[in-house]
Length: 113
Length: 114
Image 1: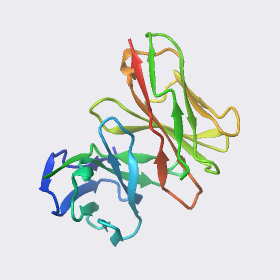
Image 2: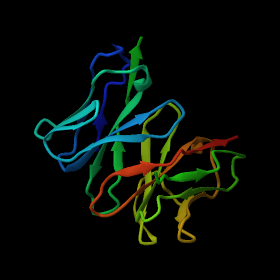
Image 3: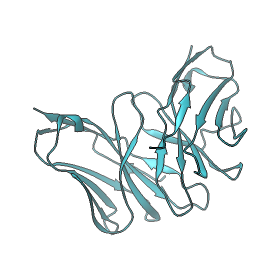
Image 4: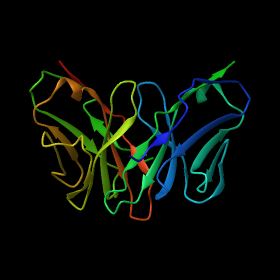
């Protein structure tokens, strides 16, 4: 069973702080890694993708990947109340078929004023 | 900015009835997906579709489910005889090319089976 694990939270951070979200995955064949943001009652919105070891920065977001440790993280700098949402880690395994995404349960982030 | 659209936004049906959920993927995208999310649970893969055929399907995607691309723009999910446990949010997603793994999701259809 290929799993993606996340702490469900909630993770509470004060406005302006750095939020750190973590994800581990079980399948070493995983090739691509994604972070989606999901507001309550809405659909997943892609915010970051990362394919190779190291850091990838996009605005206030930094994704980090460590394939040896099977670990992906997302840092959100200068957290804003509008960042309050559930963050889904998703992993893509090249199966030769459709490149399906396997999702974690998500971490709920609350940014407090 | 191009986006995936889905209709209807909410569908209420009686158990045993057939429903068709519709999606218009991003123009020029080649790979299409259906996922579902039962309330409070994780997003689950149902099926992937490419070149007018199913590429992969999950255990959830049994004989009650089917997908179709009836024309150049629409992508549909049909549930032949709905069960109470089919109540969920159904998301359509699309991906551009074989070289891009990013999937973009539509707003979803909330299916309620009574």
